Length: 111
Image (cartoon, rainbow, N blue to C red; front, side, top):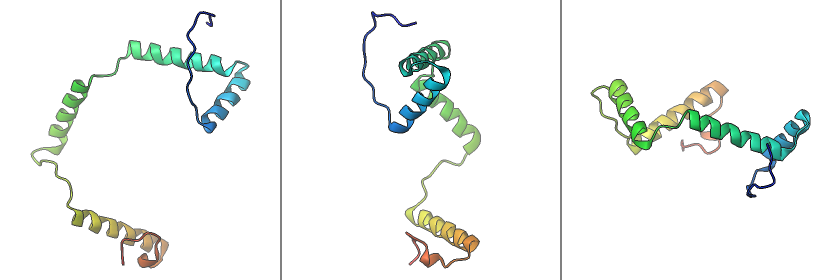
């Protein structure tokens, strides 16, 4: 799988992922770089066999979805007042479940 005539690339992995890669490599008795090459090969193979739809195709699918499920009601953003009322209602419901005063909740929108 590895040949000495490959281009070298740098990439960055957060500590949690690197730790998981090291554990997996140790469990499978392979190198981390071998796992990464295998993952790249799998992604390339998957994308070649199942290409992602183009942006136009995704937009067309979304339009069909909206038309099918939204019906004749056009989508509208909630007004700020509606959003605030919904947020306050959620706080009251969660406070009721926790049996606390909603005004004592951290970051409460209720004053």
